[in-house]
Length: 532
Image 1 (cartoon, rainbow, N blue to C red):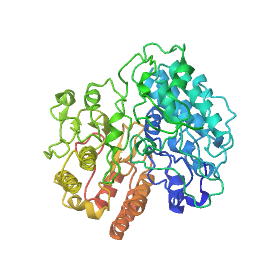
Image 2: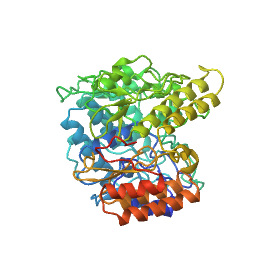
Image 3: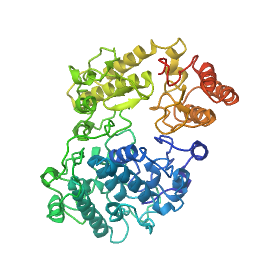
Image 4: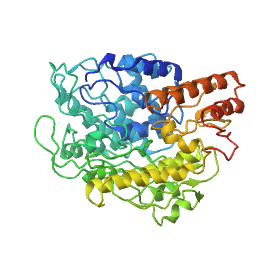
């Protein structure tokens, strides 16, 4: 797959080099389209791989997305991995190791599929460099990555990748039909110098735009998958969780080499022994994004079958951001382990999902996703409702058009604003398209053994924690300028806040210094009830 090396903005590269570990990567964008596929096309598998990589990440790999980028971009997020040709494999290997330790079928399945996804290369029809290192897990070692469909013999080679992936999925008790979802797009032209292709790249689609837009080209048929896994028994006993191949209806999809697929993917023998997951993450770290386009995600976004043994997440797993129903109305199971602090009563497209407050270092949860701050969780709840409303309006299930969903979302976020100081109530204009750029100091951060700083709002400022506040403050100021499109006055205030915070003692005082200058108050510490 072609990757345009000059496509990274210089400011983004500088931010990447300085910032260290990321949980997300919205700033990693290109200025021109590239050949297929794009690194966010199979987003569901990146999201789950990220979830399990972050459980234990000894080589400090910044994010799974870097394993799918070309070497020039990948090195900024490679952590301690020096062989960039193996960053993709090492990311999958570590995530698989962590999932295997928990016997989590969902996590192992996602890591296997991620290992098979195509990497960016220097041109259309150029194959990615092979990793010559041996993976720790034999299941990962057996998987090769897909190659650009325009490469020589791509159809046969990618089919072999898919069939081997199906075998490895079956061996861990996963759904072998997931292998079909690892495929790529239709091939581009090697002579194409326009940087256009048949691709998509939407990091706000929690499943993957290749599924939503039905641009996936299958490497094999369901019958061929069934034949490949015949007789394979799972080596995992007592496994929990599952991930099913339900992200796309394969009927009518093209098969590489000719023909179209018929029949459902759920006919494969699945030896998964569990129905829950030890993780509370629902498989998508970014469901809170507007969907006002004409493409109807309702047909696909409802299909993610990643389940959780956590009773609250299990109850909320019935939620679909694409079926016109947030799936939580009357769902008392969500509140079983805590208190619902979402008070907004708008119901277009369904009520907003509950925001459950419990104890712990990330005490707020929405549909299984956890948050450090209350307002960030409330914002996610509003946005999930907004997506459901927009999808219902786009699909015709809700009359009156999408604008009513926009109005309701504004009202929902306004209700959050009432909880803040007067300056924060003006955040929609002050902070551009983003909200709550405050920083929290905590002694109990998930990705750090000691104390550190983290952006309170991980939806808009999704960066890992840091020991020094300057890294987080600099990232927030850069994000306000580049992605949030905040006014210059806000950028200037942020830089002044960064200077003040850097000069302060690196504890709660630094967080207070930053927050007081930028947002008018303190975001609190890990023991404070004033967190957002």
